[in-house]
Length: 223
Length: 246
Image (cartoon, rainbow over all chains, first blue to last red):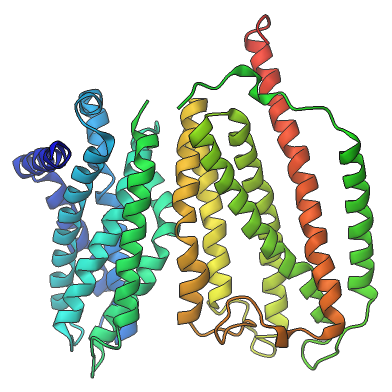
C-alpha cells in the first residue's frame, strides 16, 4: 500500500501545483484553441470530409501533447526536487504518479480540443460514444508513451524540441488507430463493431507503452 | 547496476576464424553479385530486369531489422551489466543498420516508381511498407539525436539504451498490425507481412536466399570493424586524458 500511497502523493502534489498556477492547462488550452483557429482560417470555406477531419484533429492533439507533456520531469529538475523524490519514493511509484497526472492533463486536452474542433470545423459526429471512447483511449496511450520520454529529456541539457523528435515516430501506431476510429465515428452508419480493431489497437498500444515504461523507468530515474 | 571497469573495451586480437570469415564473406558476396546481375530470372511484364533488385533491396530490409534488433539486444545487455562494450555495439549496430536502411529505402523507392507507379509519374504513394521504413529510419535518427544531446558518457549510454528498447516495443505494431490494416501493393499484402512462397519464381529463390546470407555476412563484417574502431577510439581518448592508468 505504501507504493500506491506514494504514487497518489506524487499525483496530488502535481495536481495541486497545477491548480495553483494553471500554467499547463492554460498553455495547452490556448495552444489547441489557437491551432484550431489557424486551421479554420487556413481552410477558409472548404468543407472537410470525415477522413481529413479525423487526421487534422489528431495532428493538433499530438502536437499539443508534445508541447505540453514534456514538463512533468523538467519541472522537478528545475526546482531541484528530483533528489528528494529519489530518496523518498520507489521509481515505479514516481512514474505511476506522473503518469496519472499526465493522463488527467491529456484527457483535459483532448476534451478541450474535441469541443473547439466540433465548433470550428463542425464534422458530423454520428457516434458520439465511439468518439469519446477514442479520445479517452488516445489520451491514455499518448500519456503512456510521452511520460517516459519526458523523463529522458529532463536529463538532457537542452530539452526544447527533443520531445517531439523522440516521440513522433513512437506515436505513429497510436495516431493510426486513433484517426481510423475517429473517422469511423464521423461517418454515417458508424458502429462500435466497425471500430473494434482500432479500439483494441489503442488499448494494446497503451498497455504496451505503460508496461515498457514501468520496466525501463528505473534506468532513467536513478543516478 | 555494476560500475563499468575500464578493461571492458579491450577486444581480443583478430584470429584465424576472422580471416576465414572475411574470405568467405568476400567470395560469397562476389558470387551473389555475379548471379544477381547475370543469372536467370523470370521475365515478367513491367518488372522485366528490375526483378533483380529483389536480391539487393529485400536483404537490405532484413539487415535493417536484424541490425536494430541487435541494438535492442545490446541495449538490454548494457542495462543489465553496465559494460561499455555493449553500448559501443548497440550504437554501431544502429549506425550500420541505418546505412543499409537508407540504401534499401532508395532502391525500394526507385523500384516502386518504375513498377508499382509505372506511367503515373508518382514517386510516393504512402504505401504502408514505405511508411513503416520511414518510421524505422526516424526512430534510428531520433536515437542518434538523443545520443548527441547527452554529454555525460554513462548517462548517454543508459538513456540511449532505454530509448532503443522503448522504440523496439512499437515494432510489433509497425510490422504486424498496421500493414494488415492498410491497403498495399507490396507482395504479401494479402495477409502475411513478408512475401509468400507464390511471389518468387523458383529459379530466383536460391539466389535470393544466398543474397540474404551474403548481406548478413557483409553486415557482420562492417559491424565488427566499426565496433573495433570505436572501442579503439574511446580507449585512445581515455589514454589522452589519463596516461598512467590505461
